[in-house]
Length: 515
Image (cartoon, rainbow, N blue to C red; front, side):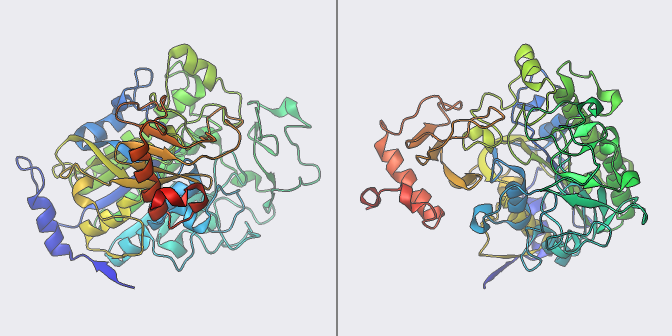
């Protein structure tokens, strides 16, 4: 296996020499790298991207002060696959990665190359804080013992995470492989098939609920909120939903403070605005758009607290911050919190006018907010370059002198990440729960998948039943399918799609048209 090796000294000189000239600063040490990954945040949920209904001043400050990408993409329209791609630099469909339950085994093999492992080898201390959703252990997890393999085994020196999503059990924090606050005489048990005798569920004890479920969230009740899956025990270890944001902000501040004298890499997974949306009381009513809008404001506050801490410790000038989201937005994702009704009432478009959202092969499923900020080293620019979150792996390796295999799908695009090259990729495979599509140039291509048009959330899935081809530059809302009228572009898209997917979905491409 050939390795692509970057040398630190030469790269820092080259990067800084090519950076913004009037305010260039010298990096005395390698820059700290922080990736902030929001959960289900749409292209239209951020005010810098045009939202007139939700204000996100702290996220906007990163976008205004750095590179704001108009064509930033997640690999997938759901959480586990896109996080897998970000941390491994590999398309998730190559390993059949799908959305995981809360008790799933670790989906990234400890033998795989990962972004945090690369950072460790480059001399960085690494940390993962917040949402995880990549699995833990080897299956049949014992939550009352040290859980391995986990974040440490794939490259994180420190971790304080939740196993899956905030709507799934177990509803506990896991710090360095151990459940926080667990008491020996109150062990935790988790099951995704059957309930534990005597434990209340949303179906048999609706009077206990402070939030009503809409679909798929009617199992164990934790803090008055029905969840997916069944849980028993661990009463004092269970999180309080309203305090989650503050808890993780404190962990982030602690990690930064403890490692301020050496380069660090931090993966900070926000849980907002994923369901259940339960923002702290000080954010309730902040938007007039109910829990979802208020949760986005809470997420923006988290970003603001991060920036304040970096500034307080005099680290902001030497820290690169990447802000993005794991996939597109969803309003009704299992709870009756008024998100759909209030968005319609306020005229809020969470996908910013893009078609689809979470769970969708349409552009709104993977086309997400993405900005890169590095004070004094990046000249503010709005970039139309096509770039994937997967490319962060190889691009950061260029910056820090890392070692990356040429077998990865991640592409080294450091000049693009820094806003000095506006060309970017020409093609990118996108994915929705195993179904693949293609972004090529200005076009979006979709094979003729059969199946339902929407799921329980109401989001379109992208099962057109015929070939789909859309010119996103002329038609960003994908209202006009030009597959029949632009046969030349369709033929080229099919060829590239087959090549880029290694024939993965060859049955959808006629051989005669590939000649």
